[in-house]
Structures are given as structure tokens and as C-alpha cells.
Length: 363
Ligand SMILES: Cc1cc2nc3c(=O)[nH]c(=O)nc-3n(C[C@H](O)[C@H](O)[C@H](O)COP(=O)(O)O)c2cc1C
Image (cartoon, rainbow, N blue to C red; front, side):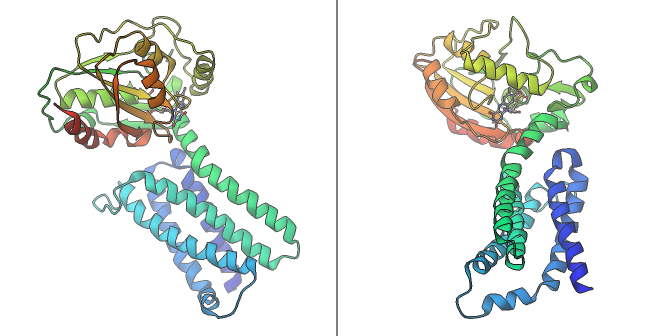
């Protein structure tokens, strides 16, 4: 009976973990409630398997598979404790006031570690008990690698592709003012929205990763630019295509952008004159590990000699990647400084961080 309950709890835990990784379809409320369910299952699992702790303390050299099992299980326990604590950092429903590490990205990485170590843990247990050792070893290795790929690549991809984030515009944009005593800076941003053939009806483009501010479609970089405009006295310009727009489907835009990058295309844009400014704050999304090609057109069609060029990137997991290096070679003569690269999910809460960065560079 105890064994059967143990198996049911194990299956439940793997199931919950996998479903939790599909946060983009699940939504926050279900994610938080399932997080608690996972914790309850974990406590039951530890009670049922408590004899394992005794084997840890037993002296004597253990065979390699047993040592891998013990190590992976100990690491798994630690990762789960850290994952539970980090979930407090991202909780909006059950624990909105408790913050432990103060880093939302950590939760994603810990979830990946827990998924991979769980697969390794289950696989090694199977390996120890089965006679078909070779098959168990191969399956464990493939399963662990697949779990890492799911956490690091598939989940961020699904987030970028399918997520619709709904926010209250004023809550995200309005707040503290930052003193900027030198000449007014120019904020230049590029976003997919406005440069894409979206139908005016948002439902027609469901399936794409979208930001709805008070029900209005907005680009992530546009929202960031609005935050800057609210915090300092500046001018703002959007990079706008004059020719062909990007397709409304996210996947097709990714392909079109990839082709532009490979052919070093410079799509035509409305001219933006930066000659009257000493400082330009460029807000752009990472596309294929660098700047979108319309941003390249903007950078190469202006004279940046002696100007400060501050970079704010948004991305679906990758940081600044090659964009800084590429911007340095495109904006000849500019003093280029990275300000911040923001994960797309964190954009609605990014205003305080942006203000901190602006204070550091404000004349
Ligand atoms: C064509 C395309 C390529 C992308 N390539 C990457 C990438 O290489 N790395 C990454 O982390 N995010 C990538 N993303 C995700 C965007 O950087 C991210 O969703 C950004 O917040 C979008 O900003 P926007 O809504 O203002 O256009 C890509 C998005 C698109 C549309």
C-alpha cells in the first residue's frame, strides 16, 4: 500500500512540475495553487522515503550509480527548497508581500534545475533496480538533457510566442521623477507593434506574444520608453518602417527577421535626426541575438560622433547577446553604455530599476 501511494505521489509530482513549466497557458492563479500542491506532495514523498536519509549516513564506499543517486537527490532537495523560497519572489496571489532573493529570473532557473534533477533522480533509481542498465542509462541521459532544454529554451520560447500580458498603464508607467540637469536626451525605440500588419482586433492575433495596456496593444519597448518619458524630461521617437511591415504571426516575423539578418538588410525607416542631442537612449528588442535590422538602419544613418548612446534591451531570455558589440560598430564614434537588459515578463515592473539606472547616468 505504502509503495502504491509512493508511486502515485511520484507521478503527481512529475506531472505538476511539467504542467508548472507551461505557466504561459496555465496562468498565475493555477500556477500558485499547484505550487502549494507540489509542496504537499513533496512532504508526503519525504515521509514515505525517509529511510533513504539513513542510507546517506551509512559508512563504506558505495557503487557509482548509488553515489550519483545520492548526490542528485541531495542536490534536488536543496534546489526544491530554493525553488520554494524563490516562488515567494514571484508570488502575486498567495504571498504578495514576501520577497526573499529579489530576483524573478532565479525562479525560472531553479525550476529548470529541479526538473532536470528530478528526471536524473527517477532515472538513477530505475537504473539501480533494473537489469537493463544500458537502456536505463541512455534514457536517463536523454531525459535529463531534454529537461534542461525544456527549461532553458522551450519555456522562454512559449512565453515569447503565446503570452498575452494585461497591465494597467498608469500603474506601470507613472512614478518617481529623476533629475536630468544637462541637455534633454532623446529616447529612440523600436518595437514590433506598429511595424507589423496586425489586424486592429486583438483577438485576430491571439497566439502572438502581446502586451495589452488598459486593453490597448503596445510594444514592450514602447512601454519602457513611456516609463523613461514619465521619469525624465526627454524627447521620444519611434523607429518606423516606411516600406513592408513584418507579418502578424510571431513565427513568420522570426523567419523574416532571420532572413534580414543573414542578408544584412537595412529596411527603410522614417528619418530620425539626432543632431540636436548629446545623449540618445536606445530601447530595442533582441532579435536573433542582436538588434532588429531597422535599428541598424537608424544607427548607420546618423552621426554619433561624441554622443552618449545608452542601451536598454528587452529579450526573451538572452541578455544583450551580440547587440552591444554590433551597435558599437554601427554607431561610429558613440560612447556606448549598457544600461539594462530586461526579460520580457519583467517589463511591467521595470520602472524602479530603470529609474535607478537613469540616476546613475543623469548629468
Ligand atoms: C523576430 C524576433 C526575434 C527574437 N529573437 C530573440 C532572441 O534571439 N533572444 C531573445 O531572448 N528574445 C528574442 N525575441 C523576443 C523579444 O526580444 C522580446 O519578446 C521583446 O520583449 C519584444 O519587444 P517588443 O514587444 O517591443 O517588440 C525575439 C522576438 C522576435 C519578434
